[in-house]
Image 1 (cartoon, rainbow, N blue to C red):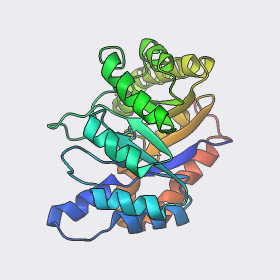
Image 2: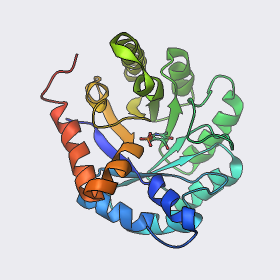
Image 3: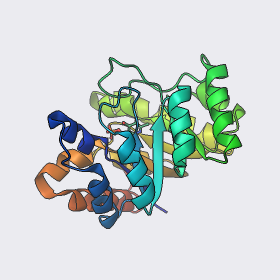
Length: 246
Ligand code: PXP
């Protein structure tokens, strides 16, 4: 089976926030993404509320019919909102105020106690937890030790690789970290910087079950519309089961 496609709609909210009005509405975007074949909707409620707002999350919880994946920092105030909202999955990500986008994965080893506390609050509320980490086997093992359901491998270095050799090196790191995760019984997800050109080999990593993709889909949507942009990305994932990229 091809991995499921989680469409990250934060960028729709970014456009709305540029004018401070009410369009385009990420809630509407979620409906269109579902019509285009999204298997999940992903949003990141950032501490600084730079794109997705509390109102969006509330309405998305009421309207999204596929999986709702909430990206969140481990900050207790945001975790409290997650517990109240009850997404189908919460993905803990690192968050720095000055960053343009999520840079690097969560340091589960370095912040073990704080991550554990956030994870345990979610588990106590029966919420599925995923941790967004770099493709480092030690971070994978530390994640598994916390009893989470899934890890999402940060594909940023793969996406930014220059030249074939570097790209292969980064793909090998993802594949190896993925193998460790699967062997430890974790569900395997990936995302960040994936686009129509580079997604194939990541989709082909064994037991990859979810890819979260935002920027490339919303960028393409400017030209072809969101429904088609999502459908085309679904096509890339489906083709990854047929064509071999290596
Ligand atoms: N997965 C996670 C955990 C992210 O933080 C992001 C970016 O918000 C994505 C996936 C999607 O990345 P991109 O917008 O580059 O496709």
